Image (cartoon, rainbow, N blue to C red; front, side, top):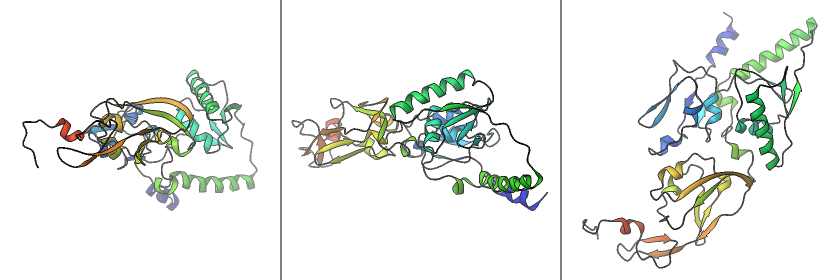
Length: 299
């Protein structure tokens, strides 16, 4: 076996779940995009954390693309591209999110030697519908280019070029992938794919969602609660942790817009700590409001 082959094999990297996974931060998390996408049951849940079963994993990379936070590290090696086209392959069906990301990476068409399958056609139609909302041009289907017979000199030149490309394709993900490559919001910062709805009648402003939202959607500024829905990737961290079920994530593509609500800062009459509330008449913080009156008071 050649030195080159040994070197390329040494660059092989397994798919791993990184610390960006919401299940690492929130034990109540119900996020399961990767679980739903893996057809080989290679993702195992232990104590609500995710692990890759390397005996079952086929390195297809579908879980990498599916993760809304780009929290799974590895290389997607079963996609082929040619001059700005994604080459049709009946062995998989791309997702809408995937095609929207490819669009921003420079892909303009799908290259197919024959009519697309029904599943591919459906995804392409829905992707083009979303691209229209994003003010982007649609994908087109082009006929697969027939490979030309190469001269001896051109053949060696091609092999040299493809050898370099092969090395890049097999390189570790830390070399090949940039941070958040599979996070849709990275590519469309002026749009939002979800609207985060807050029911102020239920919300106690306990700020649990502030702490556990990995995208930092929620913050307080100038006596206003700000919700930046353009950052939302629907990882469900906020809805999973909210004790009052006051949050709802609604899928909708539109230009990003301000979502702010007036709040009041007050001092709790029981514990004396400052707290925020929507209701100017409220006199107790959410902790004292929910405390059992018969329980020992720490002050």
